[in-house]
Image 1 (cartoon, rainbow, N blue to C red):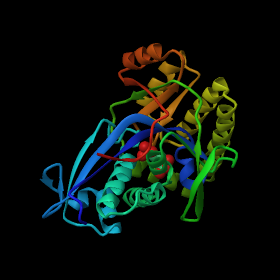
Image 2: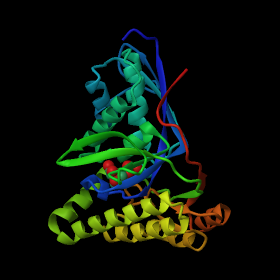
Image 3: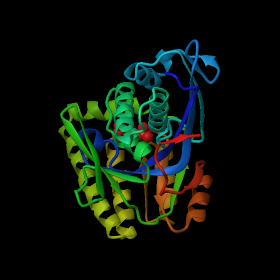
Length: 313
Ligand code: PMV
């Protein structure tokens, strides 16, 4: 470690289709959004986070990345406009940007594949179980599809874990408008992933729902590739119903989804659920924003086609 400091940033993301089922190797698609996590890391005489001594047991992602990259005694300053525990990839973006900055501080060549592996490992250990969906989207940016047909975009890399294999493709995404509705309820990912795991272990029905989410995702991806936005919207709404049966939605999410549907092609929860956020695919974003606000959510229009992890000056 000879550098004075390194800076990096990564985007947040939303999951278009396939969350939870992707943990079991099913297909999924995520899109990067124009909200970013930024960090600056410098060598120090202890470990500090935003000027305070860092208790690493409270920051499992950072702890994992420091151990994996053999760094100690660093000061990290962070800044983010991605709401935390909201289904918008705050921990994926944090892992990806911190990995990039640590590697740069170690004078390693900037390599997105290594950063994607590093940040997936951090997410996996912090969450107990995870797919590489969030971390690969926050790292590679734009749109990523996991375990979708080979003709969907360009193969970036593959990752294997727990008997699952994920083939990760970069996809080009047609121009679409999405509104995110944040419930204001913070819902950490780990417990929801665990809830689905237990349901799946004790009930064959859960596996059927997971298979069904996989099918709906593939249909949605195929519609998106044909630029058939109406069909894509329908698949999103179907996915929301399946996720509700899986037990990861909640009243607040359902209210925002229902309110958006009158002005949208489709709407669904995004991310792990239990609170957090929903998304609507629409060409009437102002109407959807109004409907979400009226039901107590915080709406914002997101832009996609966003760059992944990058080193900053
Ligand atoms: O809520 P988020 O943004 O952490 O998304 C989690 C997505 C899951 O499929 C539920 C878990 C995973 O690791 O893929």
